[in-house]
Length: 317
Length: 317
Image 1 (tube, helix red, strand yellow):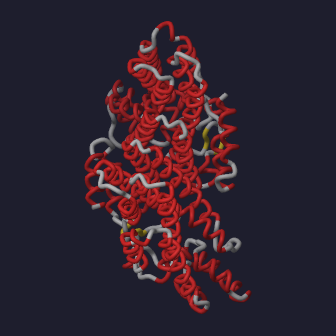
Image 2 (cartoon, rainbow over the protein chains, first blue to last red; image 1 turned 135 degrees about the vertical axis):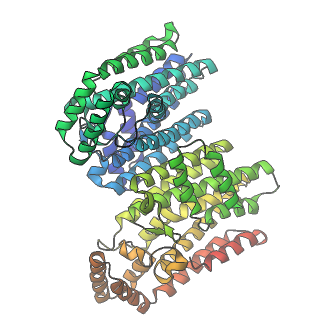
Image 3 (cartoon, one colour; image 1 turned 90 degrees about the horizontal axis):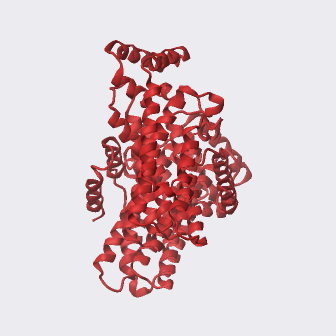
């Protein structure tokens, strides 16, 4: 459904913005993706909604579209900052059209997203959307400040960062779905917490896939996080468990990778992660956060969100 | 007053965003500027308002702050796209902190602006704000598509571009002021048209100052538009009036300037503008648009906006 919503939307804006800008927005949106956030918004709406109001469902569709637009905007601007050349198996917008175009396309997408959600007149939902927009910016700044070649960070700092950078928009999707469905305060709170925990689990899994997936399946360069000197669950957890010698060796490897981009050195880093069984810890944490997420939802209402969460957990991309 | 509002605002967000991000936002905002848009919003509010509601005036202050934030965001991102090193006499954000930081600071400022205006719950005003945000993006794209070394553009295309890129946010400032003041449909329409015409006059003047001002006073590099291959009133009007030979010579000069950045060649371009008395035409057009602007306002309510417009017209920066 989401694909059709996006196609119709593109058609509706085609003639009101410059052609060159439109074709770039079309390119960005046609890159696809998992549609995690729109789907979560729909499922949260359906989980909470007591009746089948057509008008309310239209509002849910509008916000699902806008949340995905906002998510696309963050990817477009992040890819510039991360020098990411490939996204979802295709050339990133900034690599294809240049940095200036990618900046402007991102900005335009934000304005279009606001234009859409204002149609719903749902101020509470627009506020959540905006809070999450700010969170993502703050999370991105924290992420940029963390760097493998600088000082190590704690697991709690890492969680603080992914809470803002990833989990906020995911929980906002759930919260907005529940707000539009006119949920009680308790219902809204529960489903927001569900989203927050799911979002953290999702990001830990993303961190693993960045190194342990296959480029063709994952759609991004394998080991991209290490090449970009990013702190991830893998590096932060390793820092907790590694001996002093292993830490020294890792630091040396990170500096060498920064200089030479050596794939061989990345394999060496991976073997340290493997020795310390970091993926096992990650999987345990993912399961814990998923359990915390599902505990938020009443048993008789779990099915939709449970199935969706399971499919997320089994993803390879 | 606006300066104090901005200082208080910075203080209020100091502890809720990462320190590095805060200090960059502070730098961007402390660059100052003319505060054209906030002032226009206040004056429009005062021109239309029938009573002295404290709550309404607080909303006007909130939107004045947000409009200036949005304006700052456009400058920060435009400076990246235009390779502009100096703005308001100081080093631009991207030159000082790098492209990635400037992208993220701009994005964060937009989210903060929305956070503020949502406090007012004034959906009509938020819609105008958003429309203008989209207009500015579309205008920037048109501006980027126009280039001196590509084909010439007509005066009407130029006006279409500056209408979006400059006049929209200026007229939005007026419109929002009138909306908050609970103006009638006619009052809102008139003051919006005032802003639109003033905005066009303002941009034509800006185009002249870019080449005919003094760097110390103007705060930007003189001839920056030509160096960045931008179509301005000067080049577009010249194209209307120049002989075939002059057009050929100009094209040649623009290509040479693109390659060599030669200040001597810029002086040669200027002498062609002078020969064709382009500044005289520009001044006539500025006066016409200013007159059109002031015709929108009832004579007994003109004083505030008239005085403000006069001070704008006499500006040297």
